[in-house]
Image (cartoon, rainbow, N blue to C red; front, side, top):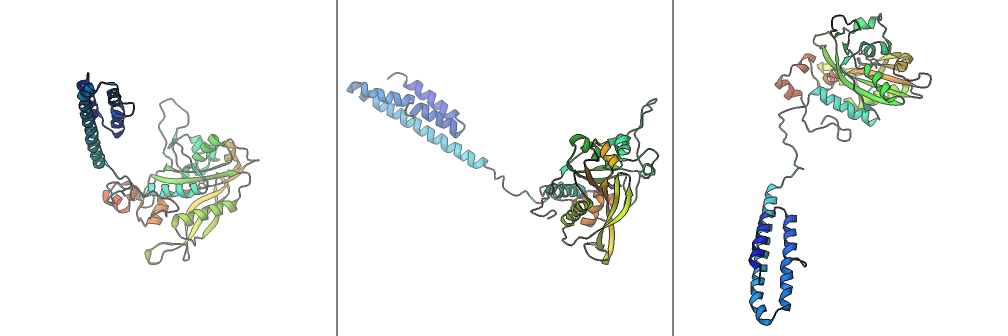
Length: 355
Ligand code: DAH
């Protein structure tokens, strides 16, 4: 019979080259499948004379057995390799952490989880901000004393450029304006991020973090502000019995405005939220001033809303018992290992925020 040697060489080479079970199966079908080349040769035996068949039969059978054996051997080799390269991606990560999540990032993730659950999206804005977004749009006129109180860092302008200088944003409130402009009403966002003021002592750093909250709809009231903040504190501090106290205050961008205190005790130098007779201020809030809505392109006759702003570093210190704010930004590895969080433990509400 012609071509047996060629057939043998070709299929043995293909078997050797197949490097997946699928490729190997394709070779098997081409050679030994119903419509395979060797099977076709086997069928030719039927049309041969008895003498021819006697010669060709054993040769073909031997070829078939040889290819079959080669296929099996190759398959076993592939299976062995797959078994060896197997990787269980469900294995938990090793607990010892070379890098850790900074408490500020952890708290931002916690805030995001809590407010996402209440339907708030996360909004962002630039840290180098125009004075319009940082002040004017928030109803802080150029001569307003709040401008001085903010201890603002001003950016440099080129010689002869007498436009007002940009500033390092002194609060996250300008993101309210950007979010209103970008999305209109109704709107529910929080905006966590870095802010800057010229200030430095045990409880102040020139760069720190705030989160802004903003909810705008047809009939938002202070009752909803109070509920939202209580719900947030309950989830964040992981205590059911939180109690908040609203104290009348003043911010240019809200009317009425309130500072919010949380009930706590300091007995034995340890802070307990939700019990005791002390009150600790944690945030500023109020109903969004009509001028602010207008600056954001929203009609104050049709929409109203509440807003609040709170210091992230401060609530991180409170929740996790961290005494000195300055250590937050010193990148001391021992501090980071002590106060940091495992990288793969993303906070979520069902599992608990800070396991
Ligand atoms: N922007 C204020 C600050 O940095 C905090 C604040 C107070 C934000 C009241 C608000 C608010 O949205 O309603 O001190």
